[in-house]
Amino acid sequence: MKLEDYLKLPYTYVIKKVKDETGEYYAGYIEEIYEAKTVGDTIDELYENLRECLILGVEERLKDGEEVPVPAAAEYSGKFMLRIPKSLHKYLAESAKNEGVSLNQYALYKLSK
Image 1 (cartoon, rainbow, N blue to C red):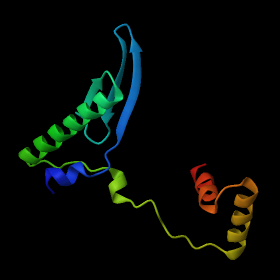
Image 2: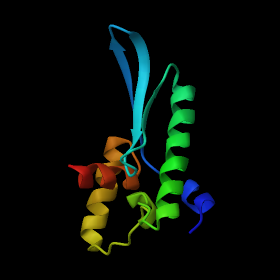
Image 3: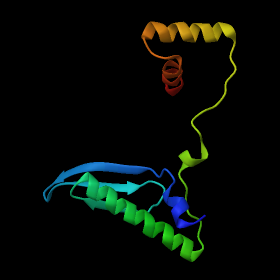
Image 4: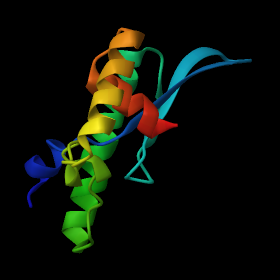
């Protein structure tokens, strides 16, 4: 893969607002690229700085022939097929309706517990 290909992947940006003796600013990092850590006075500036860190991190790894980490999300579609008994399907559908949510939302809620 080339740099451009890596930059299209959904890397995980972790952002935190910081208040300390120097004032307020934003700190962040890219979860998959350990050296991609930076700060910015605004969220937009932080995103710009993180993007630059991502580019530099990927470029260095490519130049050195190292493996470039890819986001785990890139390996998964977020969908999977599940066959269940009709009675369970009916129960889940009715429960979702009683809660006022879609079956998909209800199943996600139940799976995440």
